[in-house]
Image (cartoon, rainbow, N blue to C red):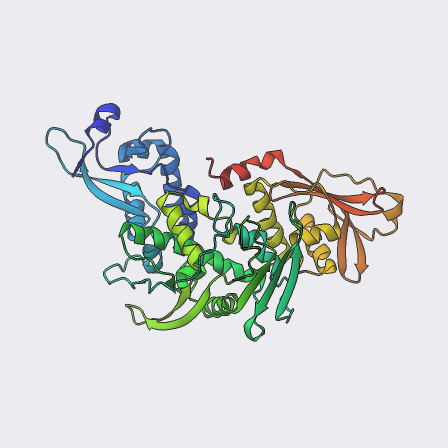
Length: 489
């Protein structure tokens, strides 16, 4: 039983106590609350507790202190913490703050549950008297180790976000089994060539990546637990679909078992598994004998779908997934160096909360530039921006969908100065944006301004180039986005 006499002496705190560890990521914590169907009232209470604890150096305070600070009864605080404990979002231990009688009290600590805890949390928190569904890593498959990650802060998905997403389908109706793109990189003599190939025509569709983001989030938490338990970590893992769907789609765990969600998740994982990315002219390291490497990359391989009955005899499904060895090794290294979840992830389900595929790609493009410190070119023509953000899309699709992003975020204070060369093309004004209609039913912004993903975007006509151009500059008011993504809180 831990002795916390110093808290009693310094602040007059007596048990029961609440703590919030210094490394607790509130954003991740609240997202997990949503995924695990925690009530809005409980979320509000725990948020108030977290904020109140920031005023205490030790991040620990008594129920009495918190009750006064957040204007709630002690019994109400205890009620919500007990509810959170049942879903592994709070842990508790016995301590004492009484140096004389050493009376036993409780310390409740806010906690990010590990991967297995998340996966085994039940839709009904009250039923916690049954054994958990275990997920056990299987044997390791040895592969040649090629280090292809050139950013150690966001090691995990930098190559995926910078390169591979550019070779994914952006059109749901596109039946192509192959996509080829060439990406020009500053400092490289040749553009990087990427070919996405699908088995049986099932080429990955960009929104499928939300399930990859969910799987990686699960994997990081799962490996964190395995390292703590000193277990052997392989490359193949069993992921129950409900927590995977919940994290991928930001839906409550209780809703994720719906048939539509399950069917969509399986189809998406099948497409991810069936797509291989060939990368050429990519290997840029100096070596005496190796001149280049043609790499063949899969995000993961879906090995099996398991149908099982849970402890309440309800039929559920789980996916057996093999991840690339490099992905697992890099997660292990990052966890051992005590990086936070946000330090490791560049993509999460937030960026997939739209049905506009170009908006997804632009969000990933902007995050990659903000985090890696790469400078976006300041002015683009429509086609140059398409080649940088979404080279697998057609120009007409890109202009239409990017225009929708600008319209949705239009600056209400913007006042366009229409050039004579464009004036006759304007067919409609929406908010402060002036639109043309190059094809029937396809409206394109000719003049407009918006702030999206940390960038101030201006679209207008350039007499020098004789064409419409899109200008970017960092939105200084959005610097908090960069700070957050880099872990500076």
